[in-house]
Image (cartoon, rainbow, N blue to C red):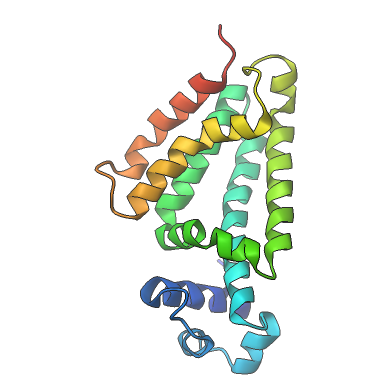
Length: 194
């Protein structure tokens, strides 16, 4: 396994600080101390705290998108693709709860900040890749007719809601234990009536 880059080390240190101290209370100095990076290295890679926040957000969402890309390459049916959207999300959240919590709470800040356009572009590309992976099945009439944004909400919305509650400690259910059920419900919700 490759050694993490200095940039990755800084991002992981920032995540640890944000988790322990909160995003607003964390300072550049805290991140520098935690990462062991020089102030010059930190500013070279990111420039300021807002860019660290944006980069951390984008890196986390890119990991989920990468899981999907690998999964779509192996999925052999519309059902497998829809279920993959759910299980990949849940698996990523369970494996990265601090990062997932950070992403859920930081979206508005990143969108409103100087990296907002980069986030919007990453989301646009991510959604386009999902639609491309499902396009043939949609053309074949495998799915119910619905707008793209409605389709996305029906498929991933329940998982995001449960993940949000699980991350906040408000769920009686273990998130990972619900992955197959939520994946099946997503599939049943969007497939065309047999």
